[in-house]
Structures are given as C-alpha cells and as structure tokens.
Amino acid sequence: MEKLNLAGAHTALVTPFHPDGSIDWDGFARNITFQIDQGISGVLPVGTTGESPAFDWDEHQRLIKHTIETADKRCLVSAGTGSNSTSEALRASKEAADAGADALVLVDCYYNGPSSLELRREYHQPIAEACPECTIIPYIIPGRSGTALSPEDLAILAQDCPNVTAVKEATGDIERMAQTRSMVGDEFDILSGDDGITFQIMLDGRIGAEGVISVVSNVAPAAVAKMVEMALAGDSRDAAEIANALEPLFSIVTVVAEAERALPDGTVRLVRDRFRNPLAIKTLMNGLGMPAGPARRPLGKMTPAGLEIVREAVRSTWQDNPWILEPIGEAFEVDIAQRIEDDEAWQGLTYD
Image: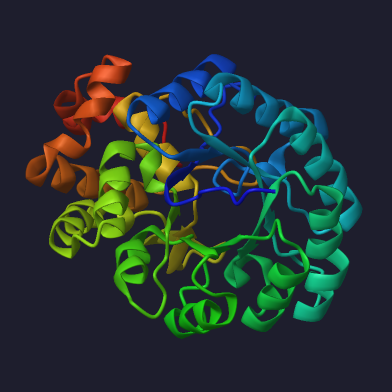
C-alpha cells in the first residue's frame, strides 16, 4: 500500500453528550465540520479524549462511521480501535477498516500490562496483518496504559508490517523519541501526543516529528494547524510564536488543583485533585458555547478551583491572542468575550 501522509495537525475529538448522557450526534457533526473548515489535517474519534472507555460497542463503532461519513474525505480519519483485549481490538479494527477509516490508532494494552515483546507479537502485529489496507499507528502512553512498546520493538514491527508507518508518542521522553527516530528512519512518522511539546519535538533535529494528535485543537484548530505548518516548513520563529500564544491552553490539558475535604471527625484536609483529559477541555468547550456536554462516569466535574484555572487560561488567551478563539464565535454564533466573563455560562460545571 502507498504510505499515508500523516504530516500535519490531527484532532483527538471530544465526544459531546446531552445532559441525559446520550451522544449529541448533531453537536458531534458540527464539531467535525468546524475542524475541517479551520484547516485540520485529520480527526480521531473515540480516543481517550473522546472517552472511548465509557462507550458500549455499538456507540463506539457508530461514532467511527459517523465521523467518516461527516468528514466525507475532506480530511483524514484515524479511528481509535485499541483495547486491552486483542480480540476486541481486532474486531473493532476490522469494522473501522471496512467503514473506510484511513488509519487505526492502537493504544498499548492498559492494565493487564504485557511486555513490549508481547505488545508487538500478540497485539500490534496481528491487527496490522489483519488490516493491511489501513495505516496502523501504535499509541504509546505509559502514564495511562502502564506499559509501552519499546523503540526496538516498534522498529521491528515497522519492518515486518509495511502498514505500520507512524507512532503517536505520549511518553514525554525526548531521548526515547530521538532513539525511536534513529531506529525507524526518516520515512516513518512520529506524531506528538502531548500538545505542550509538539513544537519542541518537531524542531528537534534528532526527532523531526511530523505533527500532532492534539487535544487543544478541539477549540483552536486553526492555530494548532498553523503552528504545525510553520514547524514543518522550518519556520521556527513563527512556529515558536504560535506555540507561545497557545501555551495557556496547552497548560490545561490536565489540571491540578487543591480543594478541601471535610472528614467525618470534623477535621479539614487539603487534597490535590488531578483532573485529566478530557475533563478540562470539555469544561472549556461548555463555557465557550461549543457542543460538549457532561463527561461520562467515572469522569464527573471539576472543583471551583480547577474551573478557575481553566477560566484564567482562556482569559489570558483571549486578552493576548484573541485570533486563536475568534473562529469559535463565528462558527457557533457565540460572543466569546461575553461568555468568558459571564459566570452563568460556567454554572453547573463544578461540584458544589
């Protein structure tokens, strides 16, 4: 098969829900259209950002098909089909391939924690061989999966399976990425899985990443796409300027905030809550008037302290670089400046 060109900015799509927890299909389609209109290279439904662990089988597959139909070949569609069960991932991958997905993103098997050798031989390779028409993108995120495909096994996998031509790297380990590049060669695509270091690993000559699968591009697709475009062109000055402008939003992919807990004996303790993706980005989208809705359990809401971190990031972005958020106002017919400061727009997004 001809190598798929994955260079560019891809969005790990949020899945919007109605208040009753059902999927907001119209909102999902509007968000996809917004991404395409703003120049995104590709979209990824049912990844971690899309809350894939909280879907039943029919919802998972329908979201992939809905994305393919809505995109209508106007951008690439990479389907999240990974699992901690190879048989389940095989079934999901085959259905996504049959539906027309361009690529399959396979997260390393979480919780049961196979070794790198097992990941290669018992997971990635069988799926790659079963779906030869699709590009396979291993997704390495040990902070969530508890395991990781090594650079060595990735290189062997890419040699043995011609459709394994990219990796989503969310280890945060710069030296590992440099080692990966030295082993897989220049034709293999390294995609950043961490918004905050995308610029760095694209311009690092030892890595030369080709782009990003981004969370922040849910709200700022044009800006993220432009940053990646400038970096690919070797324009480090303009790419750095955009990266700096996006930094307040990059900083809230995960939010850590302290909150009090009143214990049964009457004492009060401070606890550090870590609100992980996609809670902060969904909170931001709700506040700005984009389709997002609640998260599905076991995700819930932020604390008021966490919400204030999100609001401060968006205030800073709007004050210093309003162009980043202006497309939201136009596409979703909302007054961004008014919503940022309107407390009512953010009501109900935290625990009492």
